[in-house]
Length: 96
Image 1 (cartoon, rainbow, N blue to C red):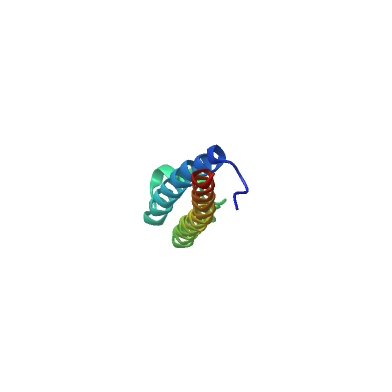
Image 2 (image 1 turned 120 degrees about the vertical axis):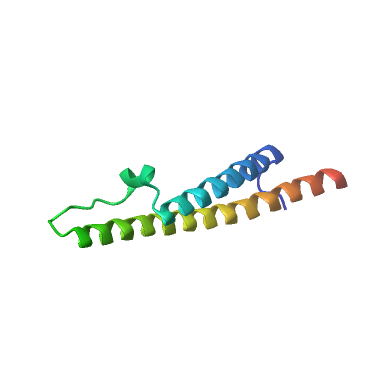
């Protein structure tokens, strides 16, 4: 049973696909500690101990990587729902 129309389901497919690709790549770059993304890690303060500072920065990169991968999985769910709606719309238009 289609809940949304064919254009909306196709739009959901395209946006979900792009979201999965982008967030998966960003998660990889966060995981390897890309310096270009350093501005987006949680607030880290330097209190004189360099090892503790590096540990907290690495922890921030890792947390952002996990957040990106979780969001990519949520986009995967959206992709599945959109694909089902696209299939349901095409199926209903063929039987009419």
